[in-house]
Image (cartoon, rainbow, N blue to C red; front, side):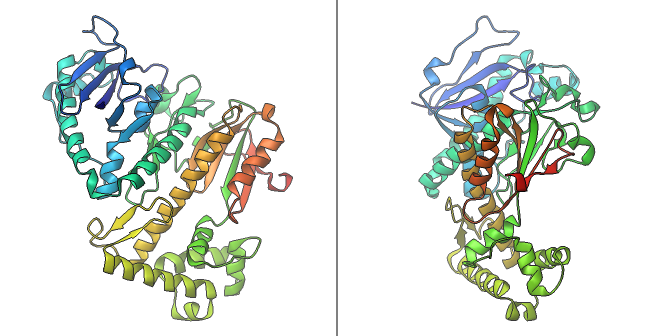
Length: 417
């Protein structure tokens, strides 16, 4: 049986995992059937319903990660993700308004658990309209390579749900506004998987976890014994080298390219990124074998995009189409492909780390593009640190490791591993 399911938590402004938040209602609608509301925690509820009959069902929902915070359902389609796979944007439901919900939410903005007092039938009205949008997206799934989407849907939601659920231990709230988002000594992040390039953003409760300043970083501490951060050296350069079949020598990729320019490594980094994303001058293209191959690749990529109307990402075969990007230029197309490739590569990496850490105390608590932050437990032993580094360094990628007792004060331990 196939169902549309929409969870309604007591407090929609708090993270679903927060200890002061709970499931209030569960909207359930069989495809082409009548909807019902299962009650868990609501002023009008006469009983607490269970959802045992849904645990083996095929489910359509707006955000799979949120539903997985409720229960580890096995067969769930993320409809926001499906719509993004088709149109490169999430499903827009902002225009679905129920006046009574808007009025009560605005009037009692500071009241916790507002959804427990909004009448159940008003929640159902809103969900019925959302369900219509979900059905419309689902009906168009034959427009895409559905098996490719399905694999991506399972892998990316599993990976980022794993990180979100771990939580980020903090010594104190980041600021007065974030006080209400601290739960049992942790804050919880939320990854947006449907950005323009496919590279997840990460913000919740007014905090951008992908761009924390120094003050906020110092409040992130271990719940176990220490924080350990692993970050890639020259991640994008190595991704590009794989795509263009350019063999980088052992050691620093930035240093390798800087030597070819005849400058120091700091100057070289600036030149490399300027040439990669702004276009390299003709003299560099002619004299530098790396940029000669990059230029050939970018031109071939653009020719295929114009001729075929799309290009495909290398791992999950997602199509980046001209119809979704009518004003894109060749350098931006190249940049989008690199960011998508980085994300797809790291999805695989996070899933492998999840399997490796399954019975360990160490947890992955934050991912920021080319870095991974772990709350490390001494009970797992230093071999766990070394194994994580080996996992991340596969395929000629190099890792720098840092450790410390808050996120701002990490010290290099690469040589020790």
